[in-house]
Structures are given as structure tokens and as C-alpha cells.
Amino acid sequence: MDPKLYRLVYFSKNRILGGPSSIAIEVESILHAAQRNNARLDITGALIFNTGIFAQVLEGPRDGVEAIFEKIQQDTRHGDVQVLAFDITKERTFAQWSMGFFGRSREGHDLFGHIAVATGFTTARIEGARLFQIVRDLAFEEESRVA
Ligand SMILES: Cc1cc2nc3c(=O)[nH]c(=O)nc-3n(C[C@H](O)[C@H](O)[C@H](O)COP(=O)(O)O)c2cc1C
Image (cartoon, rainbow, N blue to C red; front, side, top):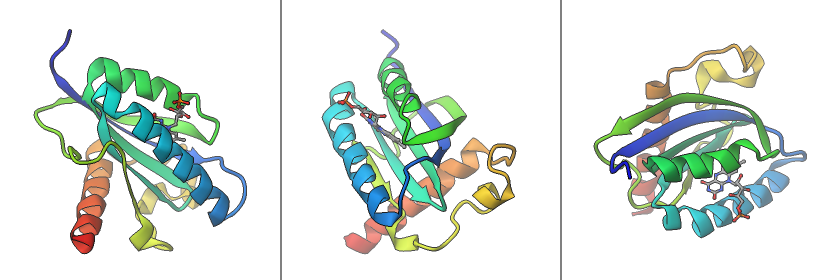
């Protein structure tokens, strides 16, 4: 087995119909699934939702990341899934979260700037490293607020 640690970063477009309460219910169900599955496969990570876009970081052994991502890709609650990075990494950034959910503190703010839906989502470009940075900063900003 490959003992290395991998990190996958992607973003996707929300396909959940309805308003904020429908989205909240589905996100709750996604996080329950993550709780059920991720720890068992040694996966940690973070998920954010903003301006109609999901961004997620998955980290763990390659086979676990691939297994979870396979299911995620088939989920009709989102679409236009675009992988920005899938690299070997030395350490976990989200070790304390089987799947942390962030972004609540920034409702109404456009976290993703130039990948906003209005700019023509599928052709807009953002680098994996930049998206990872956004997710990481938001996670640690919200964590320090709770602590
Ligand atoms: C944006 C997004 C992120 C998701 N993240 C995860 C995840 O980290 N772990 C997980 O098990 N399922 C995740 N899911 C849900 C999966 O697509 C799938 O519904 C779930 O894994 C099924 O779980 P089950 O096989 O235990 O029923 C995500 C779905 C979406 C739309």
C-alpha cells in the first residue's frame, strides 16, 4: 500500500434547488455522510459553500481519497466538478476535522472572487494553491473565533 499522504482540492457548482434552508438541510446530510465515511478511510478535510459554489479539500491515503471522491463526483447535488490539485503532501492541514464546514461567518461575501458564477464559472480559472489557501484561512479564522 502507498503510505504517502495526498491532498485533493476541487470546486463545483451547487445544484441543490431551493433557497438557503434547502441548502442547509443538504449540507447537514453531506456532513453526516462525511462523519460516517471519512474517519473510517482516514480522510480529513474541509468544505466551504459560498456564492453557489462548493470548494472542498480532502486529505489522506490515496485509495481513501479516491474512494470518497468517486462518490462525491457522482452526487447530483453539485456539478461541473473541477479538480484543481491532487498532490502528495507532508502533513495534514485539517487533521482535527473529518470534514469541517466553513463559510458561515462570511455569508453574502464573495470568497472566491473571480470564480463567481457571474463570470462564467466553467471557464473562469483559479489555481489549486490559491483555493487551498482560501479554505485554510477561512477554517482557521472560524476556529479561532470559536475557541
Ligand atoms: C460538495 C459535496 C461534498 C461531499 N463530501 C463528502 C465527504 O467528504 N464524505 C462523504 O462520505 N460524502 C461526501 N459527500 C456525499 C457523497 O456524495 C455521498 O452522498 C455519500 O458519501 C454517500 O454516503 P453513504 O454511502 O454512506 O450513503 C459530499 C457531497 C457533496 C455534494
